[in-house]
Image 1: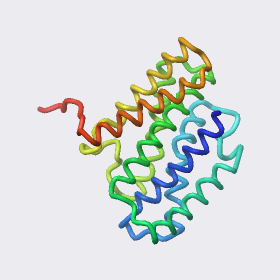
Image 2: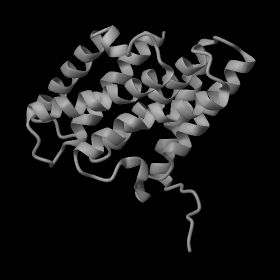
Image 3: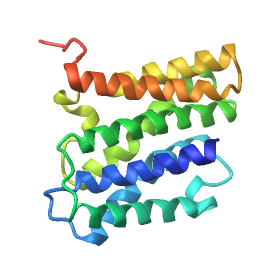
Image 4: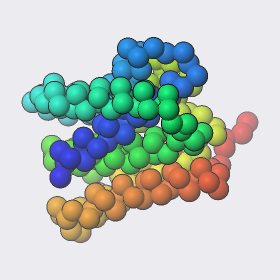
Length: 201
């Protein structure tokens, strides 16, 4: 289950990396680099922190292939299909949901405690996007005011997953429910502009 979810997340992340390059005059090579950074960055950070036997995409290069093929396909599809303006944010919401829960799940499997697993899951969810935006010389999505609920949605979803695992360890629905919560909160915040209170001096 984890393997297939990771491949799906990598593919969607690659798409978001390509869409983020729209209007930036990035060539095909640059687009592939952005896709790889977006798709592999969060998982790389997670595996380095957890000190796993090997970083997931180095251990299995099929993740790199998935990201690269998806990037090239999206790059050329964009020449014939006009993606709606919201396509990037929708793709990014799916990336956030999948990678956050995959990061939380793997952290738990490596005996990290529940709080650390939630934190590491959120970092896994946002790290690839942050690296992508830094390469594009733009303020990372997670820090933009108009982004609305982003890391907050990831925290809620990761926390929910940890609780579900405590009640029903190993249930397939735990991951799917937590991913759905993150995506749902993120998309709802975009639709209705939910925000947290701002700190004002």
